[in-house]
Each structure stands twice: as C-alpha cells, then as structure tokens.
Length: 194
Image (cartoon, rainbow, N blue to C red; front, side, top):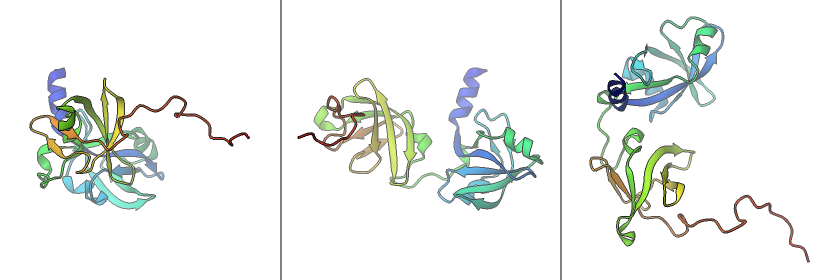
C-alpha cells in the first residue's frame, strides 16, 4: 500500500498551494506555480499529494500576487482555513511535454548532480529543491562534498541535464563551491579601529 502511494505521488506534479482563507464565504488564496498563475484551474480536478482528495477550483480573482478561488464544497471560512497548506497536484500525464531546454521542477528534483569534466564527473550531491526568488531558478543541491549549496539554474552553470539518465552536470563559477573563510560567515561588520 505505501509503495503504491509513493508511486502515485511520483506521477503527480504540484501546481500550487492553498495559503489561507479569504473572507467569510469559503474563498481561498492560492499561490500558483504555473507559468500563467490563472492556468491553475484549466487542468481540471486537482488532488492532494496522496491523490486521495480531489478539488475542483474556480479562479475568481487575484490579490497580492496570489489567486483568489472557490473550491467546490468549501462554503465557509472554517472549511477554507482547514485547507491552508494543502498542495494542489495534477497527474503528470495531464501536463504538456516541456520544450527543448525546458524542465518541470518535479523532473529536476532527485537528479544526481555531477561536476563538469574538469572534476572527472565527481558527484556533488542530489537536487533537493528548485526555487525562484525572482532572479531565475536556483537548484538546492545536498551532498557530502559541500553540504548544501545553491546553484543558479542557467545554461552556463548547468550545461547538461539528462532527466532520463537521472543526472545533471554542474560547471560552477569560481568560488561557488569554496568553503567560507574563518569568521566570514556571520561576522558582524564594523569600523576598523586605528
């Protein structure tokens, strides 16, 4: 049963998350992860990460960078509040195939990160998450070599992505993987004393 749930979860892609209620009549706020946020509702019925609960979403507007929506069956603030934090997924098969050089975040997570040829394919770690703080996507890579490192997801820094092979190649810019100097991290800045 647990193996079936894991397999099913691997076939799901997260399109958004309910961030909380809006108003008293059951509307919710949703942070959409789709390229066009309003497209969230165009994928039809969404589900939670287990695939056990289904949600029919109708977008009614937007506020503060999030969608405002109604979810079928949610009629009051308490029901909307109970959905806070629920991630909304769609089966992978419902998504269009990405174009050349495009990837779904879900396809990148779990890939083995290897250093470019200069390091002879040395393993760096595994892609643990993909973030976009506004300046473009960033990969969080965790491994023994460098602990946790954030790597810009650009063609220059990640010249090769092999989803089928379960790997990607990192060509880090100078200093990216260097350990901080003693006292550099968290040291307070102050005036030099003469």
